[in-house]
Amino acid sequence: MIDRLPGEYAILLLEDFLFTGTVDTERVKRLVQIARQEQLGCLRLSPYPAPTRKIARFPELGELERGADYRVSTQAAIWRLSTLRRLLHPSFSAWQFELTGSPLSNHLPGEFWSVWVPALVYRHGVERGKWMRQGLAICHEAGVAVDLTSRPQMTPKDEAQSRSSNWKSRIARCLPRAIRRRIWPPPSVSHLLAEIDLDG
Image 1: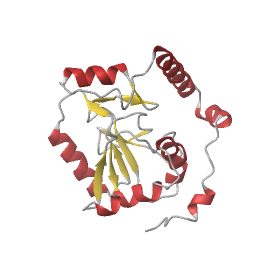
Image 2: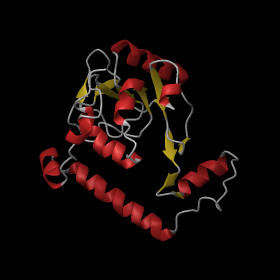
Image 3: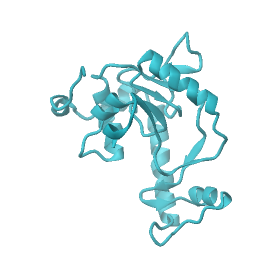
């Protein structure tokens, strides 16, 4: 599908990102222009996680430095298509795209930047293959009917497991990076480097 897109850049959004605020089209257009002008590999439109270094000439943006956790993310972003293509392996799930793509991105040309303040305001509606209550509420408010026979709603047990997982992630992010890396070392990407064109 990437090969069928015209141009050098595209905005990537997952299908369950449900907008909860008005889109500032002019700001998004300006960010696309910056991504092209600076030849960025990626410009994230949602700061989750936040950038790791300030950029003096662009106060609203920061750099996602090489080695940063979740440097590659499925959050809304402007992607240089050649960079995105190198990070998409046929065997990857969305989770593997983030976990393995982050260390893989350290070897690719082009910087990865992010906004400090969201350029797009949205909530995701589906988790672990099931509708979340917040997603259903957003659809209901917008007058969009949801077919729960094809994708069920999360049960209270599902929601409890999701909350538990989210708390573990938040606690882990509070640990110093060196300790996080010792507990959860990043996956090796040496076998993937031979498969991709690092310079092209």
